[in-house]
Length: 367
Image (cartoon, rainbow, N blue to C red):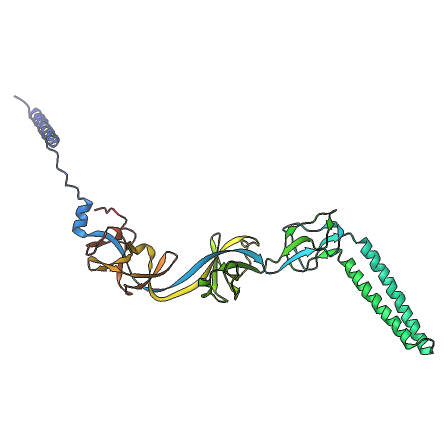
């Protein structure tokens, strides 16, 4: 007879065989009869159930600054064009382009030997004439000369003093000095050259006070007055100035009006550079202002989609001025009404909508 231990071992083996058979059967069944996947829900089905995806915004009143862009040249308010009063040889030039100078600094030295000699001779003549006047005064008191002779000596002295003053000034002008604080922006002279009278040697510009000159058409000139705000974009920032003065009459050849814009000093504003000046020509107040991308157009009509419950209604609007991606709505829309911001291209009058978070209505919708 089999022992109890053998019987128990045989039963365990049988149990494992039964479990293995069940697992194998389940596996075969899964392979032969795989589970069906749930049918995919299409975007069109979602839209049919929930509506077309859109984002919305509430129309509000706002002010809108209407600016026009003009291009003009930057220049310094104070400029010294350094010239020679004499025809002399240039002995030395003390500055380079880009150097900062102060009023009174020596810029250049001209050869002035003849001028110095003439000034010395004129001073000697004046000293002699002074001594002659003193001698004539003594003789007049003694009755040795007439009053007319004394007066003649005084007139001669004054004439010689005038000559000496002129020659001294000519001599002093051989040392050319700055009359303003600023930066040397041009240099047209080198040592050894002849400086002709009136010929520019150097140009100095004061960088502390700048202005821009632009030309305006008559249509905009009517809206611009002194003090009007101006924006000048420079690199990554906006620098503000204001209209300083306006020509009362147009240029007869171009029909344009000159405007001068006062600007604060800035490292990116350099004399001679061309910059854009955005001048405020009008400020719209009290109307609804919307992003211009919201406006739909069909033929000559401009319209928006106004939200009413879960539907939209096409609403024709009258547009006003536009600036910086914003546009004024003059009629057709009231403050507080909700309009479609994104997703309007797929809409039609009476369409059902599905409002999304801002920025989510870009086309396809995920279920």
